[in-house]
Image (cartoon, rainbow, N blue to C red; front, side):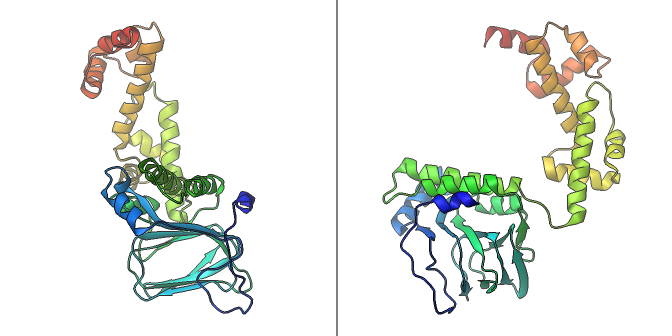
Amino acid sequence: MDNLANFNKVDHMNNTNNKPVEEGFEGQQFILLSEADLLRCSAHPIVSQLYPLTFGYYPSAPSHRVHREEGKRGWSLHYCLHGKGKLKLAGKTFSINEGMAFILPPFEKHTYETDRKHPWSTVWVRFEGYTAKQYIDLLGATLAKPTLHIPDVKNLLHSYQQLYAERRMYYSVLDLIGISHFLGLFLTQAARKLKPLSARQLSSDEQIQKSIRFMEKNIHRDCRLDDFVASSGMSARNYSRRFRTLTGISPMNYFIQMKLNEAGHKLQSTALTIEQIAESLGYTDPLYFSRIFRKTQGISPSTYRREQIEGV
């Protein structure tokens, strides 16, 4: 967090009368892309996927309060580095503490403000693009549950620094691609460091990871779905549904792909026969192993090995 103190400072106003203000804090950063640049962003095939409208950092924001009857264009992510505050959205009030973030949907009425005794320090970004909603879904935020818990912020702040470093007076096409890239990295780091507020959800995620570790240790066996369910400690129905949510595929397909990835490695880096590789991965029938390999990889194991050796 202290790294942010080393950023270049912009002109600021000191709020000495304690009246609520939206911006104008000592050491603040506030980057706003011009309408002309936003038009270029929306028209570019790469940048149009995701781009910022505005982003910035408040090292300390006493008396900070923002109220918007109609919200604003784009999605917003606000992250509380220090201090605390509160958010009012969709008729509900949410407490925001250090290590928490909140998401604001486009054009939704909202109010957020710092705590007067413990004013917050925040970074934020407002963004849009064809994939913007997919990033919001990745974060798991909804109108009813707009808050996130992201206690480990080192990589998140590094990503913000990279985004801020891309600021320009005038943007070239490559500049715009750069800020699109670093915005995606910032949101991805937020998702990676996300800790579910739901203890039940956190528990299920850990149980899925436990079953994946079981797969890794038993890659040489002919395991069944019941084995993975038992290793997780979950019910079969909840396990399969949660596993697919986290990975995008079923547990058995995940295990098969894990075996085939290991098979590819052995074909490329060892002199083991195809029969030996199949047996080492729990396949007692080498012909069945070859059929599975061809079905998923598009070529036979022997062809795969030859192409890897010849560099085809």
